[in-house]
Length: 242
Length: 382
Image 1 (cartoon, rainbow over the protein chains, first blue to last red):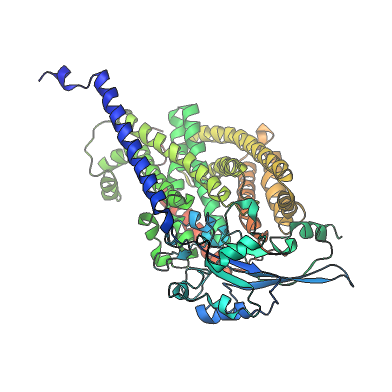
Image 2 (image 1 turned 120 degrees about the vertical axis):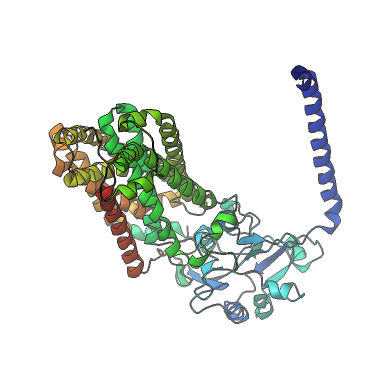
């Protein structure tokens, strides 16, 4: 065979390229259809609604979390922020229970250099693989909610994972079980019949730092704006001595 | 808004990444900047007399990059797992790329330095003496014939290839530093496109200052010919001009940064407050602006001052202090802005880590001095 015969001519090249593109397109379409077909059995998306009309600021969730997950002293997977608003006699007290939001677009997960932070595809919970985490603390700095901390005992990053060891056995997270006012509702956000989905349908909810588009899976009912993020206005006012 | 609100209970998160990582960022920008300045100047001058300066600008960044991962390793919660960063690669994380960029950069510096030193090393390997064994080892017992100039001509293509590769990775390294910080989307101070330019300006300032300082130290220890040193002093005086304009560029970049921050919103205005009158104000005005920009700029204005060894060394030291504090201010200041409450986050003192940092810096400096004892920085012909 001569050298010229061995070479691909232009027509053949375009024919083969068109065939390749068609095959790739059809397989992409088939895989999308396959995903849509699986839609009925969509993966779970665990999330939580915290109704602040019911929260009494008892810190029961904080204590339950610490004892359930063996959280070291001075560090918290779950805590409650408390602020007072107004001037006497028009004063109001506000609570904001905090925990990891297990964001759908989690900055901690995106910035983890080793992939030790990962999401379980079957339920969307964000975890830390303690066997891979090098303890670089980049995720701690990356989390816009301050939900992560370096665990001095394990030397790795630590965070709330909705008590994964409990929820996979059909139990509720420790904070939900311990909540005195039943302010926390946990469940599958993808299941329209779950308690959390029904609660979200009947109530208007807010998420923390919506401006960052991290799509947190912890929703709040009637949260006070002052507590929902860092209060930079107050910090600037304090600087001006107001 | 938020009139009369008072926080009763919240959790402080403290500053997670401390001074060691700030030093790490500064040293990388210093190494990359030094190499870029040294090599781009070679492209400009293209004279044989310039080669000793290029050797300094290649070998010292290699020494820095070889030791700088220790800053990172010491700071890790699980230092023994450092190597997992190389094979547990996560493509969305800038650090995952950075680990490779810095490592490749170090190797390109090593190879570039090797080709810069090689002609003189081959020449010395032929001469009998105490260190002949070492030179033969370093040149892999090469039996190449000819004078150092001839050898240099023969290996020109390989030398230029590694010079180009190291230059490319140096730029990539500085871009990496900027992207690393700007990828933290919750951090108002860092999440800005100007970060890349801030690190470029740090690299240009600290690079030209470091090159001036190291070459002055090298010349003080040197047994080189007076004429050769005189040529190098001329180049260093011209580096003074480069330093002057780099400082101007740094001031310009910071001005643009603050203007952008002002229009970013309340968070941006608080960032300006951190620098101008907040918790980093003294470090910003005194170390970064007065010592790090204004003073060296004034010292480098006039030609006679640039030609003075003492004044140019002083300006270089001031610039290095200024860029170090610039890095610390950005890095620590960025974490001082709270994410969930209304008080500045605090950084507990880390004396043992600072001591480790200072010891490592001393090791880098003495390694450079040590290399001068046996490596042929000066041209053999001179």
